[in-house]
Image (cartoon, rainbow, N blue to C red; front, side, top):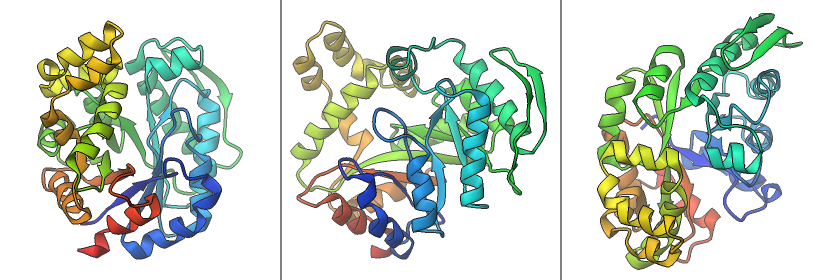
Length: 319
């Protein structure tokens, strides 16, 4: 397998305590470290630190919202990481969700497809060192030029959950990032993206042989995500609309307890990788066999292992 990524920082572990583990990742067989940006750390700071802790790793945010920073600031931050990790930084951008953009940041979540497309086109030019003066459909940039453009502009990958965005990624980006899918879903995503572009996916991995424990954790996570409109629509497209309808109905009625109870075991087992560490590694390889380029493990506590222990147990060098 060519790539095996890890989501950083680990949930509940202070960022400052990651140095030794991140430095160890290349020797464990990890090739990538990808951050996220929801309500914890920002997307860029963990990568800046990782660029110094483990200079061998490829780094990327999965993803940075295109609404919550201005286009010029996005270009500046991408250029900074590209300078810290030359040839090893990938810029991941996407719409994020109406919860993060509008409810938490007070920014209208409008025309997401166009906003991602315009941001991608702007970043291409800015990171190539051009002076950009352009009225895009969703914003205008008047005369911005990076003071120090990267010697090698970083690849840009798009968060893409459904056909329109996947096709945009295929046409204009260097790959796509997806989330919350089963191995059997990968071919459907690939059919829209095509065979050539890189396909990256964050996989939630709970290394425990106690299926009840894993499913209890998974139900909370699924309910938190799948009730968000963009993920609800994604799973309707993937064919889980009927299976998840009772959860969505209970959630909309305010009955959180029932919403969790009516999520089928089969859905949890599809979307959460669980079992012994060796079983989890085998499951991750199913994704790759079905067309995923880069699995990015998001390690969920379970099985009595600390998160650093789980990271080591899930490492590809154990096979």
